Image 1: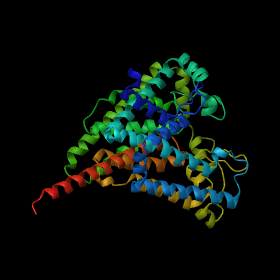
Image 2: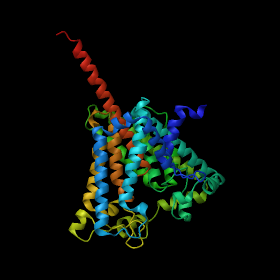
Image 3: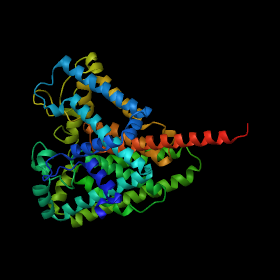
Image 4: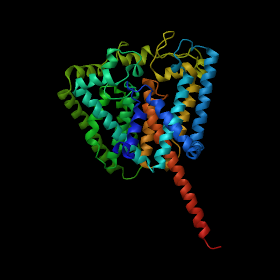
Length: 430
């Protein structure tokens, strides 16, 4: 049957793994379902998981994660400021969940995809298709309010998605996902990065879908838009390290003009076909004042900006939980949460761990992958100011699957080349 076809199963599985939609009819979280399936798969394929785990860069990444978890436990034991905080919000628990997702979902997908002879390019194409599918659902919910009402009221498990059913949250649910206000738009922005790099390679097949992806970002959370200036800047800077700069700069200008035109057209179409009340709400959110502390930007650069009380606090942290903790100050800023809890040691080791994994053998990768990884890492650094991105979420899961696949395929190519050279040397006359 078509539903059991690998061409359907793999994209569908990746869709679930990335967006983790909370479905009311499914009692168990899709996260735990995927983990269970991969654990079962590991039982019947022990050699594959063993070889993957023993890959040097992956092994180092996992060991450093265990070290970060231990550090979080020690901080909690020393400061004892996690009392009353929901267990799922404790730093050590969040890092355990991150590690479990990395091993039992992200690495699992990478091993399966590598076994099926998928390469990075094929996975990136699949990511774009997934983002387009999500964007079509989001746009349909915008154009058909009755469809949105049905999905929100009958399909989605809102208790899984949000702790509170505030109107401002319900008004920003477009698509079938979780993490609507942060990680989901970040992945949609990541898909725009991929499309941009496809255009650079004169592949225009997904250009027509850019407005839909823009809509899926605009009506959920605008944080996803940071992807475009980041990838455009990284690509622009990369031009100066190459020869024939003039022709590349001309192409860059043409692509930039095309993107500006598409964004403008998207705004015009949105104002024409989308319900005026919904559009007004999105525009109004986009025009929040940054000159007073009552606006969202004012909160991010004023009300939510807190610092440790001492130099020791900067280095080791103060064990504080400041995200949705009624017993302390509140801040959405990822860096504030990270430093007030574990200091620069926690933040530094976390970023160093991601850096070592993402930039593994990057010089050996093709041009598109290099630009994408550098842009994505910068995107992590920028978005962590808006919210805690250094945790298990859609964007990070997608990146881990991609990086793990690159590492495994690189290792396989290296081993194949070594075998070839050894066989060639054996054929040489004595």
